[in-house]
Figure 1 (cartoon, rainbow, N blue to C red):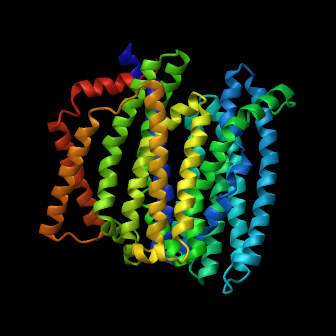
Figure 2 (spheres, rainbow, N blue to C red):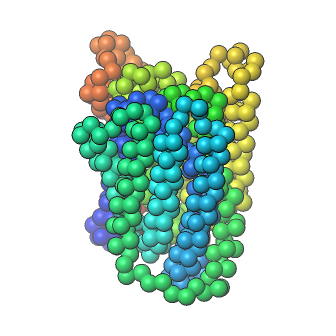
Figure 3 (cartoon, helix red, strand yellow):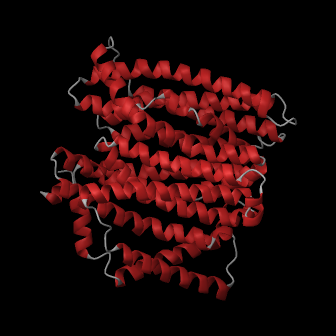
Length: 505
């Protein structure tokens, strides 16, 4: 029976989900890499600021109704009623998002914008707002497909939007359609983002053409409202937390500094993406065990997930931490080499975020939104306190001998660490979920790999050309894999355990 499950259509869907998640991360990161290498630091910084500034209020376009959808459906309400209530609510929320964001863009133009900016810049911000509005509307069908169990169709929007951005940017750069003045280039990039989102929206909406809207059931609407209220603090603070560091760094510095920071941040995305891939493979197991009220199985699933996150994420983070300037120079160009220390800090922050993600996923599925809100609230306070104390010109900053970019990255690291510790303590207390002992083997193997690569880089004087860094990374994978095997990982029993963990029932 287990063999048949591994060959089932659901098993194939998991492979598609993993591939689409990786391709989405590659597409989004590739688009930003094209901007960084072909348009420069300041344009990347301007784009990063606009995405973060408008993104501060993106939660207004959903108000946690998307997370509430499945929980309302689980209460026994028909899908058509849940879909209709969600559709009408999202339309209202999208209008609210547009109004509030439009006002905040006006505040920026009147009070915050540098004097050198022409009317082209606010036009770019409105194009980014259009991008967010389209993405928000697309979530109507993305969330609906996910609620129906059609995860692969739901993922198609993110994949098409990411690849669309990459393809359009590559075409524009190849045809020399960008770079006609910095602000004009930012407007063109913003327009490309919006076009890619529209293309993705057209496809996902076409896939949902059989969905029908019915009159909204007041009881279902009330269920959405009641459930979303408990989720909203976690949802809203989390959305603000993701963007606030970039907005405040820009406010106290300039677009160039933010461009260096944003570039450092974007190349560490694959650390968090590794945990998303792993959750995509085993996420259904948590739901199954919760429905069976099998506390021990939930605990074992979390421990195994944490083990696989460290197995994949720890060596990637270590590579960024120990060779940050090499990675920056290879992928973003020499203009970004000054952000090496920030890369190390952000890579460590990404690792803590990845480690926290399976525990957060469990708490969402088990409706533990009070502890989740407390955790994200503490993370938010940690970030704000550090940035408020250190980003303005003061004695603390000068004596620390750190740049404002490094201070911001340090605040993100501290915030991620606090978030990880709080959710990890919750699962440790509630489920008696202790760390998996094999994590120690991953730490040891990562240390051996880093020492070997450091010696190799010194002895052979490996430089920062892209192909050499890729070869260097490949060598690290081989060394790490051999170390894991010698440490007792990757044996047949691990393969059987992984199949058992990811099977359908």
